[in-house]
Each structure stands twice: as C-alpha cells, then as structure tokens.
Image (tube, rainbow, N blue to C red; front, top):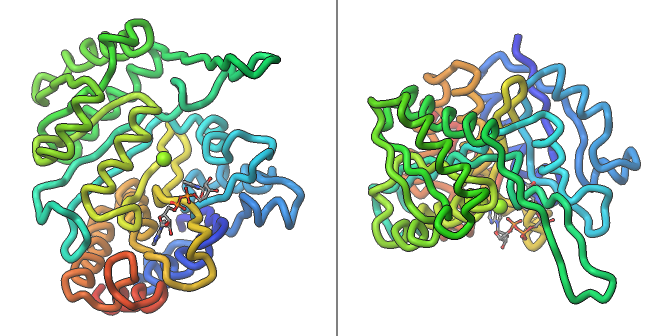
Amino acid sequence: MTTITVIRGDGIGPEIMDATLHVLDAMQLGLTYEDADAGMVALDKHGELLPQATMDSIRRNKIALKSPLTTPVGGGFSSINVELRKRFDLYANVRPAKCFPNTKSRFSSGVDLITVRENTEGAYIGEGQEVSADGETAVLTQKVTRKGSERIVRYAFELARKTGRKKVTIVHKANILKSTSGLFLKTAREVAAHYPDIECNEMIVDNTCMQLVMRPEQFDIICTTNLFGDIISDLCAGLVGGLGLAPGANIGTDVAIFEAVHGSAPDIAGKGVANPCALLLGACQMLDHLGRPEQAMRLRDAIIATLEAKDSLTPDLGGSGNTMGFAKAIATRL
Ligand code: NAI
Ligand code: MG
C-alpha cells in the first residue's frame, strides 16, 4: 500500500486538492492519504509554517502531493517551498508544458516540452542577501557547484532516454556570468558527452525566451539553472494556456513532491472556480514517478477528453464551470 502525504495548502489549495482527490478516488488506485499541514493554515493551527509532523510525514512516505502555500511577508523562511526543496534536497524541478485542446494557447499544437530546472542552488535560493545600512546597495551570493550542475544535467538526459525524447537544450548565460553559468555549461558539456544518443544544443537564456515565443516546437527538454528555470517555465506555461495547466515535480534521490506551478490565487480563493488541472497533471507526474505510467496516461487522457468536449471548463479556460464540476466531468471520462 502506497501512502501519500497530502498538503492541502492555502487559498485555492483545499479546493483544487478536494477536486484532485475526487478524481484519484474515482480511479481506485489503492493509495492512502496522510494529511499534513503547511503554510498559513499550519501557522494558525500549530504556530509554525512548516511543522515537524509535516516534515516527518514526507520523510516517512517519500511522496507528497502539495497544494500551493502562501508565504507570509516577514515569516521565518524566504519561502516554504524553497525550504522544502532545501531540506529534502529536491534537486530536480521538472515542469512539462504541453498544448491541450480548447485552452487559450496561441499554439494549436506542437508545444510539448519539459523544463528541467536545478532546484537547490544559484541566485534563486537567496543566499547571502544583504542591504547596506544606508539602503543604497544590495548584494546576493550566487553559488553554482559542479556536483549540482552534474546531477541536474544527468537527470535531464536520463529523462530524455526514459521518455523517448530526442534533444536536450542547455540554457545558460555563460557569455556574461562566466563563473557560475560558465561552470554549469562546462559541466553540462561533459555530461552530454556520455549521451551520444541524445542531441544536445546550447542556447543563451535571452535568445531562448525569444525562440520560445517564436518557434516553441524546436524544444524538447530544456535544462537550466534555478532562476532561469523559474522564469522560463512560467513562460512555457503561458505558451500552453496559462498557469491553470502547468504542473511541476520536485524530485530528490529519496523524496519527491508534486504540485501545481501556480500559487494560492488569493483573488479567486473560496469562490470554487479555480482550475484543478495543474494539480491533477501534477498527480499524473506522481503516478509516473510511482511506476504507474498506464494510470498516469489514463488520467491525462480523461483530462484531455474533458477539455476537448469543453465540458464544465473553469473561467480561466473561458468556461463558466466550477472546480468540483470540472473534476466530476473528468472523473466520468476515466
Ligand atoms: P498565483 O499563481 O497564485 O496567481 C496568479 C494569477 O493566476 C491570479 O490571477 C490567479 O487567480 C490565477 N491562477 C492561479 N492558479 C489558478 C488556477 N488554478 N485556476 C485559475 N486561475 C489561477 O500567483 P501570485 O498571486 O503571485 O501568488 C499568490 C500567493 O501564492 C503568494 O503568497 C505566493 O507566495 C504563493 N505562491 C505559492 C506557490 C507554491 O506554493 N508552489 C507558487 C507561486 C506562488
Ligand atoms: Mg515561479
């Protein structure tokens, strides 16, 4: 019996988690769920944003399905998500972006790419942040290691092999950030040499943004450092119809946490209109990770069929449906 730690989160979190679990229950997967609190709800209930019991649950079960968390301004952590990634060494952030039918994507088809983002180092983790006493100067340390670069690039190539993808694009800014991005690129080239069966190309990050908007079909797997990956993966979500359709997996050697890329959406929280697809697609990634690719495929197909039929779509997709109605429409197509 596989037990999953379920974090219902803040804002729209509980609504999309209810919807997701409704669909998973309909699949009769034989999974058990263990609830654990994190975020504002945990702060209210337990006086902590990330209680020890939640950490213990994740460590024990090794798999978590997580709704978005609100990080309060002035809280103890720069971000609970960054903290989770750090504590469990979740070094690979894997974000697929694929065109689905009847979304607001400008590209009717052809976009089917995965961003593999380094998740534990670089500028994004906010190490060494300081503002001078007079408030005139701010600094931040950006650290990249060979070990960190090597394992993320290897993950990208292994993912290519496992999923039958043909190309990995290494995205960098080594022409300007010669030390950090330079080390990442140099290490990436060394790793790529061990995968002669997978095409490898290199692209500077600003050009990548332009290329993604002009000709997204050219990309298969993008592998990059933390901050670039954060920005590029949202751009990719925009290519395929928005944040409501963008899932993400945070994967370490021991633990993996699956989520939606979007946040807690306070503007629509409590209204029951959030799109549950991103978290549902995160659950598909989870099923793949659990070695249940047929079940992942079954769920993905049901989501696609529901989008195709324009059945009960939520307002972000141009419909007038609600979160649970959409989930039920998906469940009937399983
Ligand atoms: P957001 O992603 O929550 O919202 C951005 C826009 O997208 C809003 O207009 C929202 O209504 C819409 N949106 C997001 N998810 C949607 C969904 N499933 N269906 C329909 N519309 C959706 O980003 P924002 O407003 O910058 O952040 C809000 C809070 O979320 C912040 O406290 C932030 O720290 C947190 N956050 C948490 C994340 C996580 O836990 N993984 C990731 C990003 C932000
Ligand atoms: Mg982001």
